[in-house]
Picture 1 (cartoon, one colour):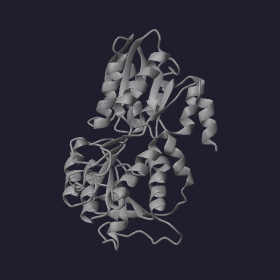
Picture 2 (cartoon, one colour):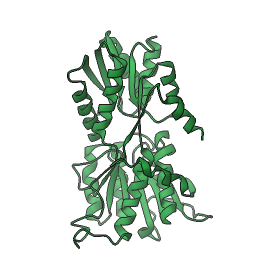
Picture 3 (cartoon, helix red, strand yellow):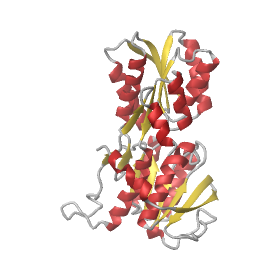
Picture 4 (tube, helix red, strand yellow):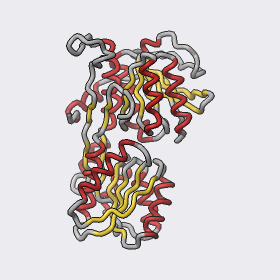
Length: 349
């Protein structure tokens, strides 16, 4: 189930992309048009404009579409997969955290009847929109965060229970004398719930005691405020685990302001090379890196093969037996002080 051996595919694919701002009644959207060759057409100026070839268009839909984590990883692979399969790939969704606008976007995109959609499962309330896409005949998968409440055809991404295990192990290794630890995550999301359960299970029988979980809404400023509150409420706090990409940044900001750098250990999910420097100084103990490029690359591969592989399960129609795995877990990379130098060197290539 670990797909790391296939990462080399991503570096062998050429891509030419055109990017434009796109406004719709429900909010601001980014639309990216990708295909093979040069002189790509400009994307539609209106989100409601009909596409000339919906059978060749695939959408990635999310909140916070301009999040650097997405732009530098997920969307690069989404574009490359589009170039590989000679299809048009687009991105839609609010540029900030706006769940209502996000769900509206899902409904609007699926009403266009594209060839397929890949949706990030931020919140269980998206399930109805996902199910509506499928009712309209639009193949729909999720990536990064699962939506098991929905009828999604497949989930591509990290096994989030494993993230919780890895974050817990990072604090256990850094805090042999034990103590109180807290967590930062995004409330209500399925992936965070799974991760928190893995975290709690791994700490059982150890000297570490989880005392609180705060929601940071995927925002570093909120994470900093939440961490400051935790430090005040629990003066004996010795560790913080960050479950989303912005948790670690916010936690470190608050800890630095209290002059507790290195005293309160951080184990976090992160994907920004600059943040890895904190492993070298001891300000951060462990970083869990997701194989994010594989999320969107394999999601689009699944959607494309749904139409073009000719594969069926026991001759059953795809509506009964989709020709893709229910779950595709893409694995983790654990970075700590012992291997951060090699990791940083690889980022420079």
